Each structure stands twice: as C-alpha cells, then as structure tokens.
Image 1 (tube, each protein chain N blue to C red):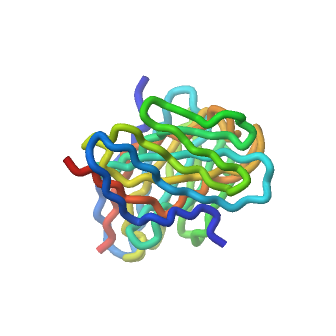
Image 2: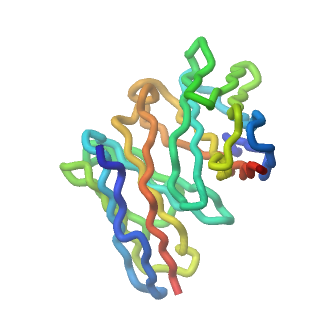
Length: 117
Length: 115
C-alpha cells in the first residue's frame, strides 16, 4: 500500500500568491517524521522543512510552513508569496520510527508546481 | 561546508556492463542513502548505510549493491546493466538515522544511460 499520497500531479500559481501542496500519509507507528523536498529542473533535491509526529506546533521555515493535521494524517506544504524560482517538483517524504530508527525514508510521487508571472 | 558530491555526473554504458557510482557525504554525516529516480517509477529507495553497515535495503535485485567506507564515503555498483537501469541515481547524506534533525541532503545525482 502506498504510504505517501500526493494527489496533485501538477499545479499552477500566480506569482506572489500563496499555494498549498497536499500530502497524506499512512502509518501505524506513533513516531515518525515528515519531510518536504524541492527538486528544480536541475535535478538536485533540496530539503525544505521537517515535522515530527510529536511536535506540538506546525513547522515553519521562511516562506514555507507545514500544515500538520495528525488525526487526518495530512502534512500539507504552504508556500507564501510564490516566486518564479519556486517552480519545481515538490516531494513529501516520511520516515517511521524513533530517534534511533533504522526505517527507510519513503517518498511520495511528487507535485509539479509552476509559478506564473 | 561542502555539500554532497557525486561522481561521475553523467555516464553512458552498454547492456551487460557494470558501473560504480561514488558519493562523498557532507563532512560529519555518517548516514548515506541511495535512490533511483525515473519518470515512471519516481524516487525509489535502494539502500542506506550507517557506520559502514547496510541498515536498510529497497526492493531491487542483487545486481545492485553498495558499500560504505570508514570515512563515510559510499559507492554503489550495478552489475550486468539492463536498459531499465537508465535513471538518475541520487545520493543523500544525514547526520544519523533517527528522526530529529536528521534530514537528508542530496547530491546532484549521476545520470546513467544504458544503451
């Protein structure tokens, strides 16, 4: 069963607008971490933001914030004030387990975001 | 601090040959993971090494192997190449293997083309 679902294969957003990229996950482990990565056309994966399952507050990193709804098993990425350089593939990922977890990181299929001037 | 480096960046091989890809992690990082990325299958996990030991393995045939050296540098090897092995191979390093503060940092990838 797919553990990470990203239902939006492609999205468009106007420059300077905010956009939300959806991610839902499936796990029975109470300890897990959720990650978002950006992959521009150059190919290199760039770490954006992390949310732990026990974190009380939603993670934020500059223009990126993670809307974490634990009961819904959802970890949506919100990008505020979109810029042309935000055009890229965005991947949601999860690693199950605790601080000494050896579980692998699982990636979703990705969402292609295009920012329109 | 230097990022993750991967060599070579591009490679063209023929079916049946073998190939070795190299990854140097960020200084101080002890965990190295390898991924295969293709348009059809997306990002697929190959294996993860920590302190020279393979800790996790994905669902790939035995033709795919890897190792990690004492300086945390890692290599992956693919023997008897098939056309379907054409892909972008990404290496990622992290401080450790737990959840907290152990986000992965990726290299630029090696683009392998099998003809």
